[in-house]
Image (tube, rainbow, N blue to C red):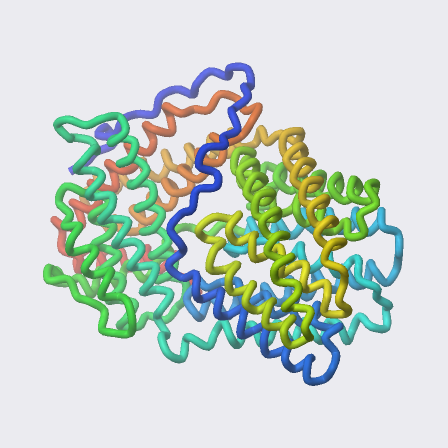
Length: 585
């Protein structure tokens, strides 16, 4: 049994050395990755959700209104990682947010024709969209679709009298997107939970393999093996945490979710005790979760485990953080919001100064760059430039076919939308190769234009937006990243102490404390990774982070041993009241 003294005590904070500049990398920025395991879902969804209103408008002879229905249709790209009950709510909020963005842009465009004012409003909207998408953790494609639509709408001719009808079209497109996003629930009601459980099992198996090659206790290991084991452990912890969040996202306690919960328990045990895990069994269970077959049942289901899982279901995977706290004065999101506003404004005004007819392209380019830290922002800038330059060449090749007629134009846009989602998870630049010609073709639904003019404007705006966007990220420093690490460290250390106190007491349930500790460790790793890529940063408490992670994971292992040793039914009876205090309403 572990005790409070069993963990490595945190070392004192590293001394604050002068801020230092970190090198911006080039190696590997354009390297393709493995595609997302659900890339085809947003790809198919956006094609269906866009085709229905596009073909309707084609039949009515009003393709000039496509931009407004497309604003709602693009909502079909979101929330594919969420269970359907949670997806229904989140997707409704996405549609509402898109409608609000379009409304703000339409009203502004109706009230003023000043390009300088429109750029300023576009920059502010981009910053708000970026901040809210990051704070709510809505997932890919994040704020980019909102910014693309609202910025284009700002520079489209509009009058106040047209606003209600255009918003109705956006809501209609959003309603179609909502129905398309929810439709798979009819065939595979637990599909998202099955996929996230399978990811947790595969990640736990990968960590078990890596730990044996280079984890703690290995007889002979290289530094690279040890680093690989640490990365695999962080990835497995995040995957297990995401699986619990998916399973506990709704109040419905179905037999399928309980069966999936048993498998997540096995993944969690492999994370805590990799030497005792069976990677082959974990991967076999993950493979059987494909399709709609029965959820596999581990052969070593323990007596009373049903009661244990009922107790697990009774509490959240981690304490919910209110939205207002994520956006509070000390939020690490605020410097990123300021970067977005400054970068978008600089890009838009520079485009105006150069006489480019579509300054919102430069604004959107700048908005697309901003990630969790400067290094990732730089990477995205390189990817955006390469993808857009190749994309304009693709547009030059596609334009002759698209200009044959409106039906061909619609087909081209749908094919490019599918291709963008098929490629973007491999690397952002690969998706941009399809996004760029699609964005150029969207401008032609009202009337066909000369390809050479569109290509020149797009190239100039891409370079202007990328250069000034990265420059703004360098100028607007994010010193709060280190502060965020300190808060995450304190939270992880508190969670470790509480779990160890429960272990030392020798009674009561340890599952809630284990879940909270896992969540704290995931947050700590995310904060450390974000701060590590910032420029002009104070010295990071790297040793404290390493010590806190190792202590936390040792404590997690101890809680797993306790769960194995004690009867789960007894623990649930003793801790039922405490567990239900944190249950979702």
